[in-house]
Image 1 (cartoon, rainbow, N blue to C red):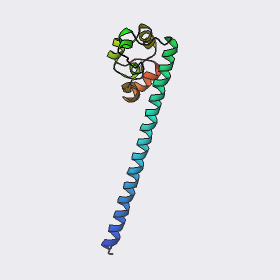
Image 2: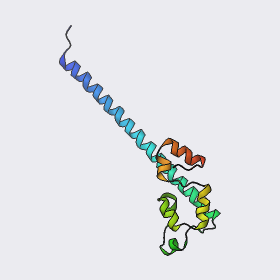
Image 3: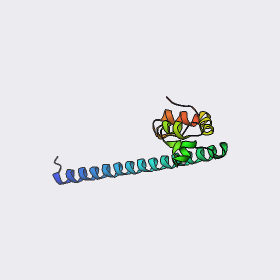
Image 4: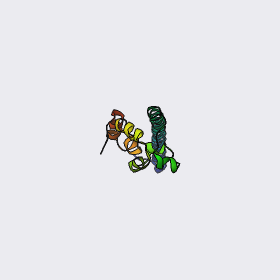
Length: 123
C-alpha cells in the first residue's frame, strides 16, 4: 500500500489551515471577552462615581484637589495615594463602605473581582 506524497501533503496543509482558523477564532473570542470586560469596568466606575456624587452632595475633592483641578473620577481608578491626597472626608468615608473599582480588583483575578463585587477589600 502506497500513499502518494502529494495526497499526504494536501491533507497536512488542510489540517494546518484548519488549526489556523481555530486559533484565529479563539483569538477573536478572547478579544471580544476583553472588550466586554472593559465595558463592564467602565460602567461600574461610572455607576460608583454617580452613587458617590449623590452620597457626598458633590463634595468629592478636598481643597488640594479643587486647587489642582483634579478630575474626581480619577479617584475611583487611580492609586489609593491619590485618594488620600485629594479626596474629601465625605468621599473617604463613602469609600470605607464602597470599595473602589480599581483595575487590579476588576481584572487582577477572579477572587479579587468577587471580593470587589461582595464589597470586601483585598490586601
